[in-house]
Length: 352
Image (cartoon, one colour):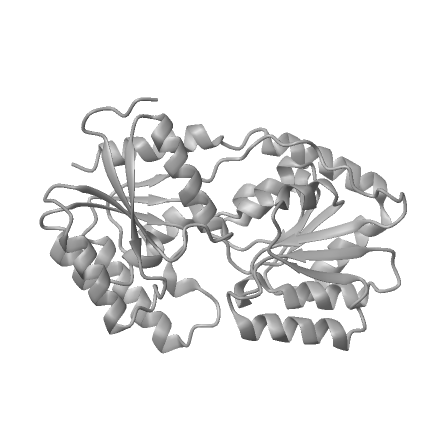
């Protein structure tokens, strides 16, 4: 589509836009979809050290924003927006700043309480200066209103869900494949998954954990050691990032991820779209994405409940098929990328 006059957008994104995480995947897809709606989107790269920029990187970000023309409409990824309140406060006087919040920075797992409080205060101050705020889930929008003092209306533009082929799974007819997709970071709690599988070592299963091992090196090393200590190296594969994640979903039978917090849960939605029954935790937005007919959710950190849910699905192929069909049906009700982009477009149009 030809760009509409006046529909110019600067999208400020920290780090490598090509990174395989869900947040960057969302940003990439929205850039494409906004283009289809007539927006001319220019990416403004910011240093990758956000949300903890050093002095040099914060100076570089300051200089990058200072070069933007007065009145420019700037969508800022929340990984950076909430971490630079002074810059936001200063530039809000001349730029139309819109915050895109995947999940609040202070709620990332593994933060020291003092660091979390600094980020909470920082993000509250920055969000107060935004012309508009966009969240990627209703759960995140509620958090922003209730805990971060966002008084204005928060637009919700969730990730879209494609309509891929249904998973085939169990190609050998006997050994279910359990798939987990997510970077090896504390919040995803893959350790709980490994512990649950160790408790189910007497069942037939194989597991593939797909996700970056470089996002949090200590967590990745500890997880590999945990797998080895359980004697499961031949049954649990740490696949790292893969070129075709879709093939992983298509060849799986169960999706399992005990994430303690998700701003939306793109991997859960994608699993459902492939017709996979889900085992997960009610980590904020996950409960909004995964209905009971699509799988089993337990409280975050509930080892017993998570293990039991996995055991039930491993022992009952008919239930796997029923929940898989329910997952596929539920996914058909999730928004498309085009629909979500229209919501984001309306929010941007309103940032006057």
